[in-house]
Figure 1 (tube, rainbow, N blue to C red):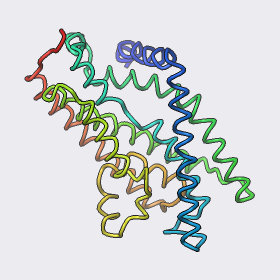
Figure 2 (figure 1 turned 180 degrees about the horizontal axis):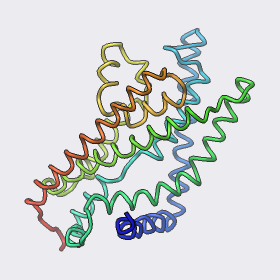
Figure 3 (figure 1 turned 180 degrees about the vertical axis):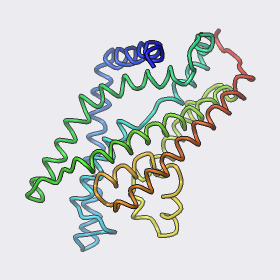
Length: 272
């Protein structure tokens, strides 16, 4: 373990340095996401006003506000740039230098991202989650925070990130065959936002479609941890969802190894 950490912790430090090197971009990205949350808030407020009911598919307007902000916060921790990073290195030829290093190909990307996530967790996630809890306190008139629920939420977030990472790495390996993934990455991100329940909660889908989407791996990206945080799942259902997340993580880890083995037989270095 000591040798493992000694090998890969420098990549974590590199991720931290990379995140702090472009502070203006980091701040602009954060402000843009906050503006998106407020735009969606007014959209959903109009939906609830037109429904003529204080609840809609089991969600109150307060629930929807919490859902919007917690979904956004969860995305900060679970979204992975693995597909973009692999695709860019294949496109510019830097993949050659990474492949000749005596380190695990995917671990270098993973620990680099963990460095970035540590900053995001400290500077954005913690303050904004505190803001959500303050909002809930003034709305309900009592402290709603539960350490047990939060622990399950963080466990779910951790598995969501690992699933997201290996899924994106699998997608990124397509660059060995397609050479450029820029357009495909945009298409993938748009589809995933819908399938993961980030744009519209899966509870708002027709029953049959919702049942299918909840069993697909994409609900693990944000919907599952957010529903756990909001207490929408019973203890038994939360345990089932966590087990399902674990299965998908293992599945995509195995798939990533198989795809990498096949992709390395088709390496064509551009610009190298």
